Length: 610
Image (cartoon, rainbow, N blue to C red; front, side):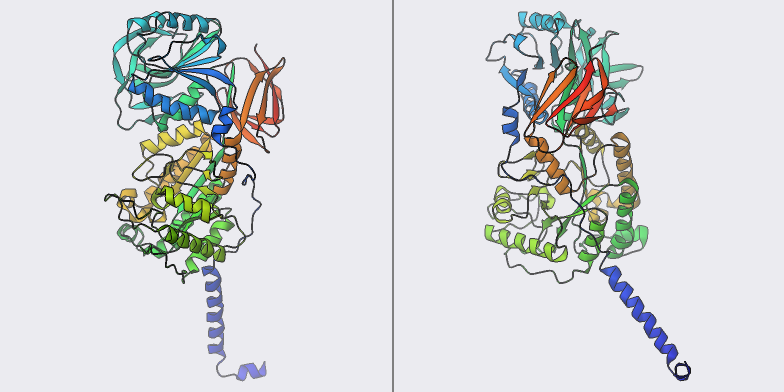
C-alpha cells in the first residue's frame, strides 16, 4: 500500500483499467448473448415419404362433388375444392353434369353441389331433396341463380323468398360461435354483386352475413330438413383466400364432423441476420434521429424481442450473407461477422431458429429466365447456384454450429424449377422451402405438403406491418383451414415506402402487435413453433389417413401413417360430448368446434345423440 500511494501514475492506471473493462464489455455485447441448444419437438420424420396424394387415395369415399364444365364459376370452385378436400382428407367422387348423368346419391353420406344454374336438374333436385329429408347432407357451395328450378327446393333450403338480382359482398361478418376469430367483420378487396338476395325462414341458422343497414344479406347458413341438412354458401368468391370458409361450411355436414389440421404458428424474419441493407433511411431519421444500423440494434430488434417476451412467439431468421449482385459463382466469405453473431445468438437464445435466405439476395433463377422488368435481379448458371448455396451453408454453420438449420426462404419468394432441383440434389441440409401461399409475379407458390422428393413445402401466408384487408382475411381463413399462422417481416420494411416506411415503425409495430394479440386471443392453443418444427407438423399432417366411425358409445377415429401425434378439428353438430376421450385430449375452441389432439393411432370419444 505504501508503494501504491507513492506510485505517481495511479490515477492514469485506474482510468486504463476502466477503459479495458469497458472494451471487454463492449466485445461481449457485440458477440451477442450465448445460446444453448434447445430440445426440438415436432422435428422431421425420416424414412419413406407419404405424399398428400397417396394419403388421400387411401381415404374412404363418402362425398359426391357435382360440377358443371359449362360454368366458369363451377370450374374455379372445382379447382379450390379439389385442394380443400385433399387437405381435409375427404374421399370423393367427381361428376360433370354437362357430360354425365346424375348418379344415385344413396351410396354417399354427403353431396357438394358446385353448380349455380339448376335448370338442367329436374327429378334430380327432387330426389336430392328427398334424400336429405331421409338423413342426407348437401352443401350448395356456389351462389345459386334465380330460376324456376330453384323454386322447387327453396323451402327445403330455408329460403322464404329470393330475388333475381344479386347483392354486394364487400364485408363478411362471422358469427362468434362459428369460426375461430369470429365475432367481427372481414373486408373483401375488389367486391362485386356476388350474393343472391334472399329472405330466410326463422329455422335457418345464419353463420356469415353482410350487414345491410337494417337488413341482413345471408352469406352462409344451414337449414335442417327432415333428418338431414342443407348448407348454403352464398358469397361467390372462389380462390385461396376463402378456403377456410368452405372448409367450415363442409364441416357443418354430419352429426359429428372432423378433419386434420396442422396446429402451428411461425414468424419469419427475412434478411435477418444480414449486413445493413442499402435503402432510404429518411423515415428512420425522421422518427428516431438514428442511422439504419443503430435503429436496427437499439429500436427495431428490441421491439421485436418484446413480442417474444410478451406473447411467447418464436422467430425463424433467414440469413443473407451479402447484398452483392455477383451471380458468377465466385463466392467469398463474409468478413464482418459481428452483426451476424450478435443478432443470431440473441435470436437463438430467445427460442428461435436460423434458416437460409441466400448467399446474396439474387433468387435462384436460370440464365434462360426473363424477369420482363418486374425485377432487376441477375440470373445464374446451375453450377454458380450450387457454389453460392454451399457457401451460405458453410457460413451459417461457422457462425451457429450444432443448431437446426434446414429451412430455405427464397429471396422475394422467387424460386425456379432449376433452383429447386439444386436445393434437393445438392444441398442436403435444406429440408424445407418456405415461400408464398398466394400466387404472384414469378412467385413460387405452395400448398402445405410433404413432397415426393422429400422436401417439405411450407407456404407463408401474410407479411409485414401494414396487414391490409386481404391479409387479415387470409390469416383468418387459414386459421380455420389448416389451423396455421405464418407471417414474415423484413427489418428493411422501414426503408421501403411500398412496405409502409412512410407510416413509420411505431405504426407498423402497433399493427403487428395488434395482429399477434388477436391471434393469441382467438387461438390460445395454437402452438408457437420454429420453421423446422412446423415442417415436422406438416409431415405428420400430410401423411395422415384418418377414418371416423360411429360406435355404440360414441365416435372412434383410427389413423394410418400415424407417428406420434396429430390434430383434428371436430365439430359437434348434433348430440352431446361425454367427459371421456381415450387416446387423446379434446379442447374447446368456439361454439361447437373443438381441437382433438391424438396421441395414439386410435382415439375414442364418448358422444350421445340425445
